[in-house]
Length: 239
Ligand SMILES: N[C@@H](CCC(=O)N[C@@H](CS)C(=O)NCC(=O)O)C(=O)O
Image 1 (cartoon, protein in one colour):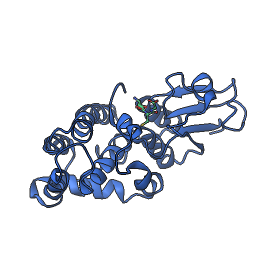
Image 2 (cartoon, protein in one colour):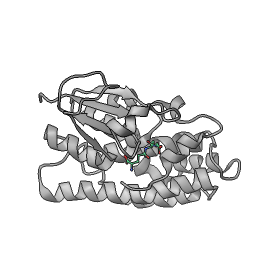
Image 3 (cartoon, protein in one colour):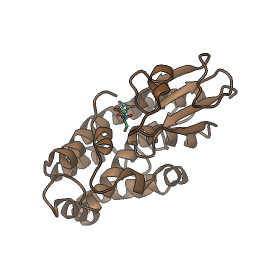
Image 4 (cartoon, rainbow, N blue to C red):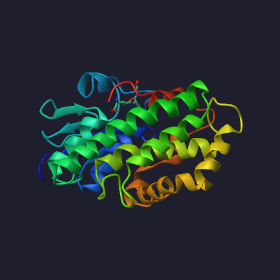
């Protein structure tokens, strides 16, 4: 692969971590540029992503400093799109057969659409985190008996892991707008109820990978009280 890739990202952001996971899993070389979401550079919206969000990619063009992006590079955004893009340029991270590819895409759609509002509802709006358990049961039912979301590691795993990881940290530390103690209570159910054994194994598998360890920044992702940036990150507007 000869084209340069610059990833505009933020440690705090689950949508950006998706793309970093995919790039690293596919061993695609990239230059990482951290955007301070609370103080975004003035050039970011005009020169990289008009939506002013991370993640975004500058693809191709000359190798330049990330803070002076070239007009010659293609600018791409939206984590779901970028996951597919990484799979396309690497020829990796999606199964070869059409049915399994469709299953991976179905997993991404379903898991994201269900998990994100349940998580956001609990941590931002104070809904019961029990809703997260219900959604995890649904997502767990999509998993095969063993292995990753569709067997081999794919963009489906890169898509959901950042959300699961942030929920794990929030619940374990009882961070969120729900009643005090509810997060830890739900966390303990997730950790011990035999009903969630398949989820636990899946979570252990995806978070044991070096790429996860390199791209997950627990402290940046959650500070008490939860900042408005974190809350913005959790709200699923469009994917
Ligand atoms: N749908 C977008 C969501 C991206 C997103 O919400 N990014 C947040 C950070 S987690 C962001 O950049 N927020 C900045 C802002 O809204 O000003 C995706 O999947 O890429």
